[in-house]
Length: 172
Image (tube, rainbow, N blue to C red; front, side):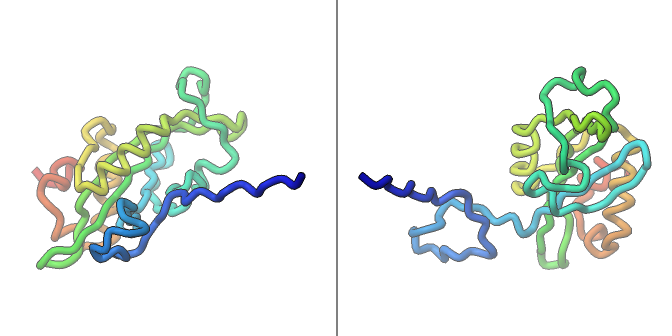
């Protein structure tokens, strides 16, 4: 008797634009990640950079690291903020619509790190829903992030809501 091949599951779909156009068929309920970017804040080096690999936990920071859910098990971890930044366009042009920060640490030498995966997924979802959740970040990191976003695109920064600018400590 021959072995039956396993059925392939549909898996998670990442769609560009709205391919369903209201037909209600395949792909309905899938989400688009094209307007979300993962931005890392290296707290110790005071460096901010985008690494799209974080969309699938394959960023330079995360590669080769086994993540644990207990921060005490990674005593020498280097701290980072992974900030999910969502962009949108309105009548004024493109702007930063959502920003949510997630804390993590990485000990390269021990190949271990700390992060809560569910928090990263939920915060990415919140950013996509245009929430701003950065109040738990340290002040230095918020200012670094704000300066990075502003220098990345002055137009997007100017079009962004005052709530984001105030949350990042760049405008009172």
